[in-house]
Amino acid sequence: YLNLVPALRKSPEGYLWSSYDAEADTLYINFKKPSHATDSEITDDDVIIRYEGETVIGITVLHASKR
Image 1 (cartoon, rainbow, N blue to C red):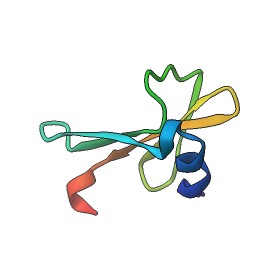
Image 2: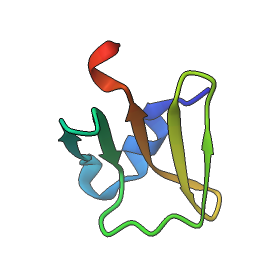
Image 3: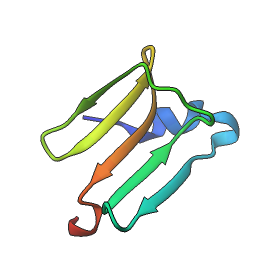
Image 4: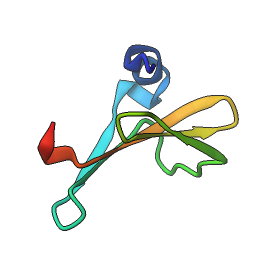
């Protein structure tokens, strides 16, 4: 459902930023900083894909420690 390589290649300098919230057990991965999502969708396996326009700017992985 999501090919990370094109999103990473489009990010500035090919970087990505991530953070993990242990209390919420949620992993945040951003391909753009700062990022301001204009839309999002949740997949069947509890991954939120965030968009700015048509561009994927990040993903949020719910229940990260159980994967």
